[in-house]
Structures are given as C-alpha cells and as structure tokens.
Image (cartoon, rainbow, N blue to C red; front, side, top):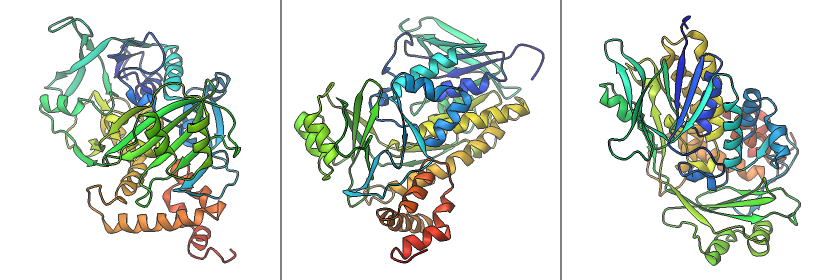
Length: 442
C-alpha cells in the first residue's frame, strides 16, 4: 500500500460482506460496509429472505470463521447454538434408508442464519476502522477510465425518493458482496468492460420451511437430513437452533414444490417413513406458518477469465458463484474466499483482481462440480452430461449405497461434502474396496 490513508467499501452487509470486511480490515485503514436494509434491528432482514430457511455452517466453514473471529463457537453456543458431530449427531438418509453412523471429527455449528449474521455484524463492527451503515443502496461505480481503475461507488439514501440524496464514496477498493441479485456485471458493462462468462444450471429448487418448539427426538438424534435423488426427488432438513427451536426445511423441484398449508406441509414432510420427521410435524408445537422460497438457478460468473478487469473492484461470495442451496456450501465457500482475499492483499492493490479471482476459482471448483453434478442427476434439469459427470454420478450413487452399511464410506463422503477433504479421497483403495466389494474384509 502507500503511506496515505486507505479506504475499502463493501457492498452488502450479509455474511459474505462481513467476512470480506474482516479480511480487508487487516490491510485497509478504514472499511465501510453498506447495505440497503436498515441494520438497526436483528433477525430476518428484507434483503435476506433465505434467512427464514435452514442453514448449517459446515465443519470447514466453522474452522475458518473461528480463525477469523476467535471465540465465535463458544460465544454462539453460550447464546443457544449447538455444536454437533455432523455424521454421528444427525440421522442421514438416502431417501428412506439411513446411513451407517460413526463418530467423526466433523464438528458443525447449528445456528439460524439470522443469529449468525447478527453475531458477525456485531463482531465486525468492533474491528478497528470498520463502519457498517444501513439504508444505502449502490447505484453504480465511480471510474477513472484512463487508469482503468474503479475509484469508488455512488449510493442513494433509501427512502429519499426519485432523484433523492446521492453520495459518492471514494475508495481504493470496492467489493461487491450483494449476492445473487448483484449488478456488478451490469456496472462493468456500463464502464466498457467485458462482463464475465456465466455458467448456470436451472435446477428450479423450491423450499418450504416451518419452525417448531424443540424437544428431544425419540431416536436420540439432534437432527435429520435426507439426500435428494432421482428416485426420491424431495428432501428434508430438520436442524436444531438457538431458542430451543427446530427448523424444518423441505425441498422439492418446480413441478412438485413443498406446500405451505399445514396439512400439505405435514404430508410432504412424511413422504419418507422417517419417524423423527413425523414426530416433529405431528406432535411439536409450531412457532409460525410455513414459508416458501424459490431458487431457480445456480450461477457461476467466470471473473477469473476476464482478459481486462478494472483495478479497484472485486466481486465476492454469491456475486461470483451462487450455489444450489440444498448442498449447503455457500457460507463455507464465502469463508474460504475471505482467507484467499486476505492472502491476495499481501501483494498490494496492483493486480489484486487477477490474484484473488484465480484463488477464488480454486476454492469454488470442487463444490461447484459437486453441486452441478448433483443437479444433473435429475433428468428434468437441462445441461450437458459430460462423461466425467456421468461417471461421477454413477460412482456417487454406488458410494452412497455402500455408506448405508459402511461407516468408513459415510465419513469419507461427509469429509468431502464439508470441504475438509478433496473428492479424490473418495477413490482411495480402502473406500473403493468397500464400495465395490462390500462383503469382503479390507
């Protein structure tokens, strides 16, 4: 950097934006986080409707957040969140068939999305030089065309009306963390830059979620998760969270969405003969109505391939890649991107987009391939089924069948899902033996 005071602006005060601010705070003198929502309150925000639905911070994500915000796990647990061995504490099912259980080192954090965001906003707001401001919407980028550099952002005060109060905020770096609906590619096009190529998969996922008063389950588990397959193209995630609550999210596809009326929701939740799900929907006290949420597509913007990208601007989190949320990868990927952003900043601002996007692409590659491969198992989802995709899906189907009787296979699968081990470990000799010769001793 230089001896002059440096300023970064982050657009979006959701989880990705707060993680970006944490990474930036190590380098910049001041970091301003902006959001169009009023941030004075807590709980579900208008700009984050997905906050009403089930979220889980995977093992790798929890580890990274603990590093970025030391004490996070203990403080959230003290506020009512739970730590759970993701493999041994939850009942996992392939459709109606349970996976084999065993203790693992995969400790996840069961906490609602709003509670996690509120916590991170409070922690980020205490960092030296970090300011978080609500009620401001970004409308475009400031630009120095001769230098090929973004120099700040133009914002409008929410509620000021057409032609209302606008502000130009100068910055050495602008980070777009405004999520799936971001306008970053539009802004780049307006400035004369080539927008990134875009990969998308139209899975057409529909959620319906309801909360219940939480009590112990007869099966002794701390939650239930079911896989979604062509054979069983619907699923459920029953997770504990703070406030002694269950959150039950049902997932289906466009032509078979989970309903929100009481009888329809309960019937959809019990399509699979899983006693714990039936116990919750029929015997636990509901804490509100069921709510629906649609996610038409997974989208990946290939910023790493742009030949000419302005300095002073970065996309981050869902603005780069918005995953199908049924795989639960978004928050963990954003945490890993924050680590890469912090490392890329060590090389200074010159060339930062090139360095960061190259590293972010390596973070995204594995979970994107896993999610896209999972989506393309469904005949209704349009997309090219390459030989690699067909082989991987064929193998994963066999591996999940083996996981019903082999704890070793099940744990290996969950290590990959939790991004603590690469997919190659699923092809280790010991795993291959259990997949293809389940009755033979290793």
